[in-house]
Amino acid sequence: MVDSIESILQVARAAARSASTLCLAVLAESESTPEAMAKLGREPVTVADYGSQAVILEAVARAFPEHGVVAEEGAAHLEREAGRAGTEKLVRLVGEALGREVGLAQVLSWIDHVGGDGTYTWAVDPIDGTKGYLRRDQFAVAIGVLHGVDVVAGVLACPHLPWDLDDSEGRRGLLFSAARGEGAFVEALDGGERRPVQVSASLDPGRARVLGSVESSHGDPALIEAVIENAVLGGGWVRIDSQAKYAAVAAGMAEVYLRPRSRPDYRDNIWDHAAGVAIVSEAGGRVTDLDGRELDFSQGRRLEQNRGVLATNRLLHERVLEAVAAVEAASG
Ligand code: AMP
Ligand code: MG
Image: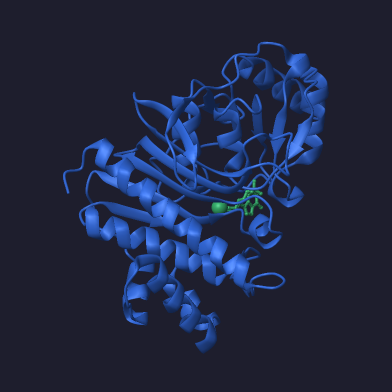
C-alpha cells in the first residue's frame, strides 16, 4: 500500500476498531475479571492484550510490511504463561476479529512482528491501562506512528470513554485520530462521521480540570495535589486510566493531564504516549515533560530523556510548569 499519511491512518483506525471489539468481547465473555496472567514485572496482562496486538500487527504487516513496529507485548511470555486454554482462546478471538481461520503459529508471528527498518515506526499499546480494563473501567487501544523520530499520526480507541465526562452512565465509546498538519478528529467507536476536536479554549485556572492516573504507583499523587493547589486549578482532579486522559484533553473535556514520574529511575514507554501526543498536539494542545522539554522519541522503546509528562490545552501550560517547579523547589 502507498504509505501516505491518510492510508496509514485508515489502516490504524480500522485496526484499533477491530482490536477494541476483541477486547470488549473478552470482557463480555468473562463473568468476573478476564483471567490475568502474571507478567514479568508487576503489570497484569490478559489474553485480550495479546489478541489486540495480534490484530493490529497483522494489519500493519499486511498493509505496510516495510514499516517498523515497537509494541508492548511479546509472544515468548504468552507461550510460557497462557497455557493451552489461553492460547486456544487467543486463536479463536483473533480468528473472529479477522473473519477467517488462523493458526497459533501465525498469531504468535503477528504478536512478534517487528517489520522492516523503514522510515515509519508504529508504537503500539494493545491495551493501555490493563488495570483499568480489568476493573471494567477506562482503557485504550493506542497506536502512534513515527516518521523517523517524529510522531506524525495517532489513533486512540477508548471503548469505555463517556461522550460526556460528567455523565458516566451516558453513551460511551470514542475513536480519536490525528495526522500531523491535518487536525484531530473523533468519531463514535461503533461508526459514524468523523468530526474535528479542539482542546478547551478556557484560560481560567479556576475552571481547569486536571486528569491523572487511577494507579497511585504510576505517578505521584501528592505532587499533583500540590500543583493543583499552587496553580489554583479549580475544575477538579479526575483520575482515569490509560491514554483516555490525552483523548479527554484533546476533546476539551479537561484542560490538564499531569503525569509526574513515579520514581526517579522510571522511564515512560513510547507506546504510552505517541498516540496521545499526536492527538493532543493536533487538537491545538501542548505536550512536554515536567521541565518543559519536548518528548524525545529518538531513544528507542522509552522516553529516556524526559521527566514525566504534561499535556494541556496550551493556554495553561506555562502556569502548570511553573507550579511544578515551585512545588519541587519547595520540597527540595
Ligand atoms: P495509567 O493508565 O495512567 O495508570 O498508565 C498506564 C501505564 O502506566 C501502563 O501502560 C504502564 O506502561 C505504565 N506504568 C507501569 N508502571 C509504571 C510506573 N511505575 N510508573 C509510571 N508508569 C507506569
Ligand atoms: Mg500502556
